[in-house]
Image (cartoon, rainbow, N blue to C red; front, side, top):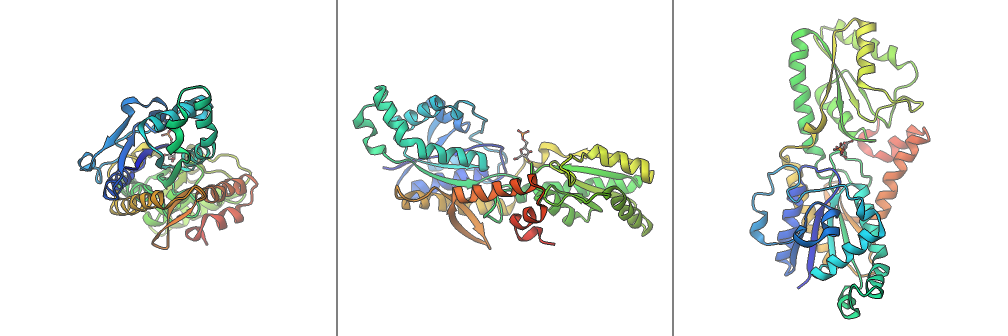
Length: 366
Ligand code: F6P
């Protein structure tokens, strides 16, 4: 029987458990054995109890749970060749030759590198007598399939990453709550949301909550934004708004790439508009909690597709990543997708914000 490993890596995201459940059950359904690798790459390097066979019932109740029940970790050892050698040995000893990884672009890039290195890793394991030629014989190729799990929705080539809609839901609900207290006191609030270098969460939340102003990294405000923002907020106030809400992405900056902070914006509103203003940094509350319907659905369909992709793969198939485009679950080339994602960050660094917006996709079009 084929043995397929499943792992979650990088920051947890709602829906990762749904993906693990779908992979385990689809693997069993397709006549394979499923193994969960606990604590991300750490589990692969350490092996032992951190690699555990999963039966159908072991993932019962996973769909509605937040975080990742099989754990995740930032693993320094896997960055080093000795760590990857240990990981390869652990996999071969357990008979696992395919890995489905749910994580962000960094975690998935690491996986692709592991696959590229695999032949030299197993050769070294034989040369150093860690494994015999007979032991490595059935494991000449490593199969990797990526699932994009991240609240940031920062991966190009896919309309949604597993977790982003659950996070957005929580942000909107938190902003609604802030609205109540802000209106009561006629205050201003600057609310910082996550997203790393991506403004998707901030922009979507601003649209969905009717915020007064939003800062995102891909479209920094032009020089003189201070006056523009204050002008807009004053106008809204003169129309009878009792509260002012500014949403700021944690990666926000100005056109010169100088960071814009929530506290800086608060000071401005306090001083220029004499607006009693508070800062709310939503933090990890955006990441925990139950997966919404969409993420349960997406992770299930993508987990199923990931197992099918493993079973279809040949040694020549480039590492696939499972994406969703225009509501269709698809397989894309992982490294092409990662390269596209990196080009957005590069465009921002080069201050080519039009290109950054264009590369980010349809939702950001003005
Ligand atoms: O990538 C997900 C994310 O939550 C980002 O939005 C945020 O910048 C980062 O992870 C926070 O990471 P940590 O939990 O390690 O502080």
